[in-house]
Image 1 (tube, one colour):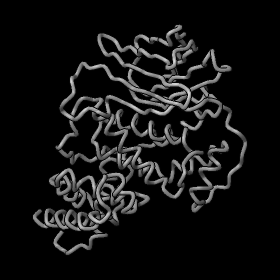
Image 2: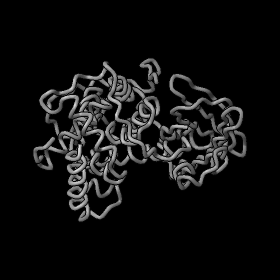
Image 3: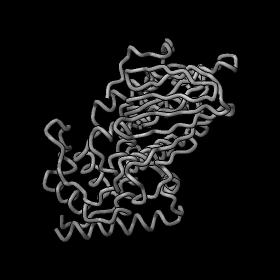
Image 4: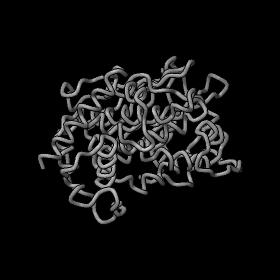
Length: 152
Length: 199
């Protein structure tokens, strides 16, 4: 490449090279389109407002640490701890404490747990991947709160 | 990762949506929010490469990259009727992709690799557009790019997305003053040019 390339030409070449070296896989496109069928509008969305995995400084983590996350709607918070020991556990608590039917969605798998009067619930042997929790609250006219999808 | 159609949580409505190449993004978001799978597919077709190019910059393995991309689209599914500034969707997607990538790389308990792979994808990759680059040029560009600083690589990757991101978006994504984007762009492109000339 001896000729002097204009900036735009060089960027175009770079874009083509990056695309050629790692093109968008068709399977990723299909999966992205399929996410639409997971749309829900009847539940209140709890946003991820704290994630210890996002707070730690690179290189200052401890490998076996538990990961803490907080999801929040105006009315309720879901505190979640991912405990990775021999197997992966999700330990959660609803704040304010309340009983609820908590469903863990994990790809094509769902599991249901009941939170106790302190709002606590646990899921055992949870594989890695994208998960979301749906909580049918017992106290609040059976309102449903759903967390954002999060990779654990 | 499989996302079977059978676990449908909400029926997709029968809203019909005319597919046009230049449908404004605001209309696509409204239609998707109203239940149009077609509008959603158009959004994915239009912005899938953008999301992928941001995630790709983090050099994940294929499965992790697919997971991160998927999470970005799941976020948009949840937010498509709440995006306050539809014209900023490209910026929103790129920012979300970058945040999810950073989160994933920290979760994987490893730093972002500084080594840049110059391996070209296998034969299943779409054929290279011969009019832009031949194989030799491709290797030259990737090799030179791999010698650059992570900062230059990141900004150049964001500068050559499809659709393109404007300086304001890149400024937001990288937390850099908007006035420094242009000079950094020039400096990094000059550096890439010099690395290529040396080859």
